[in-house]
Amino acid sequence: MNQILNWIAAHQEMAYIVILMIFVGIEIIGKVPSVLHTPLMSGANAIHGVVIIGAIIVMGQAEEGNTIALVLGFLAVILGTLNVVGGFVVTDRMLEMFKKKK
Amino acid sequence: MELNLLVFCYLLGSVTFIVGLKMLSNPVSARNGNLVAAAGMFVAILGTIFLYEDEGKKLGNYGWIFSALVIGTIVGTLMAKRVKMTAMPEMVSLFNGMGGACAALISVIEFRHLIHGYDPANYASTGYSFFSSLDGTTMLIIFLGLIIGTVSFSGSMIAWGKLNGKIKDFAFKGQHIINLVILVLNIAIAAFIIVARPEETPLFFYAILLLSILYGVFFVLPIGGADMPVVISLLNSFTGVAAACGGFLYDNKVMLTGGILVGAAGTLLTMLMCKAMNRSLSNVLIGSFGSSAAASGGAGPQGGTYKEISLSDAAVVMSYANKVMIVPGYGLAVAQAQHICHELEKTLEAKGVEVKYAIHPVAGRMPGHMNVLLAEADVSYEKLLEMELANEEFKSTDVVLILGANDVVNPAAKSDPSSPIYGMPILEVEQAKHVIVNKRSMKPGYAGIENQLFFQPKTSMLFGDAKKALQDLLAEVRSI
Picture 1 (tube, chains in turn brown, yellow):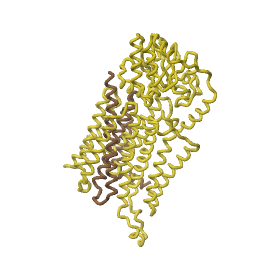
Picture 2: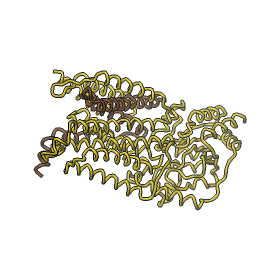
Picture 3: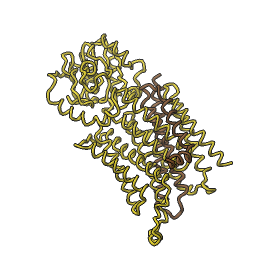
């Protein structure tokens, strides 16, 4: 019990962010019309591409001689970039269609 | 100073994600919302590359980072620009899988980093295990990132394969039990490592990786192709959580906010999608079993006799009608027949026939998919009728042409309380004078149930691939 409390105290900043973000995430898309489900999913898909920042940090910290870390990190950055760039471009293309018909 | 600037970059990034997502949920601001989030992402990435430092040490390997960024940007843009509108959902799934794989790779590298320099000989004599010195919280987060990221990756790949038709639905007896066993085993191994810190930790780590891949595959395989949007949305929120694990690992606020935001919004979106189809999430995930059983059972006793209509008869009926209503569905999207459909519409209009489209909110491969698809083919916005409006107009409609839609026009949703889709709002096409149904065969739709509409006297069937059938129909209409 004490351990758990200590753990929460040590990570309280993170805990606050997590809880607040859960509510924010639910609140802001609560009233989305069904026509926008697909683009919204695609947009959210691009946003979780933020994981690329972790990949960049890993890549940037890999030591020169550590080939496996370099190669894996390289791969991770490519995959992350695909997620971010592809995600935003696809979403934009979908939404472009919506605009055209107005 | 530089670190403070980075903090500001991340704060900006987090705010743009929230604002962007908010704008994305409104039709008017959606496109700008996407750009806002993209701009925030750009700032956060640039900030990380140039400003990030850990214990006073800046990032290195700029050559590697930039070449990876350039490759990813070029390939990603090309893929996203070239993909056909009908293939959008599988593209999203593919990109989602990339993000999941990225999160999993980070976990793999960080784990290797953690045990780097470990030499069993050094510890053998002291009797003190190297692994017991590892931080439990860090390991927990690495495992979480690994499991969630990997499941998201392998699941998305299967979803992608299913949507483009490369992978068929596949279910075997006891699949759900095996899934459960894999999941429990996975959690047990992770918990065991964290608590007991065995010497074989690396071995167990890769066992988790393997099991997670398997879990993702078995999780998605039995779910029907038409339910994929819901699954992709769910996996999307998984990847969000995996990204948030990275945020924990690096004490990185923008990864944490972005990841949790998508995790929460994605989960809600998944439930909203299910609601639009009037089904529960568990029904989608586990119901695949029941529906495949119902499909085999339902195919046996035919609900009566149906009649076929020849192309020339269909062309005549439509050409001399006053009002034709087209109901597009899954089949139209699969056959990519939206352009030829628009051609038919124009040809009929030239003959003085009023042509409109009735759009069911969940018709197609994803909610809203039909609107996007028909807009791509330049069908004008005024011709697309929402469900309620369309239902009023069916009474005055002479011919309804159903293109590969099934469950969204099944009258059982209104009349049969025992039907799995009972209660789902449908397009009431039977109010029209004549109904022509284009389908590839008499097979039931994804809900796996018989559609009585096909056996009604006013309904006639026009079998064939939607694109092929429409081309032939168009030729017939033109020759009249």
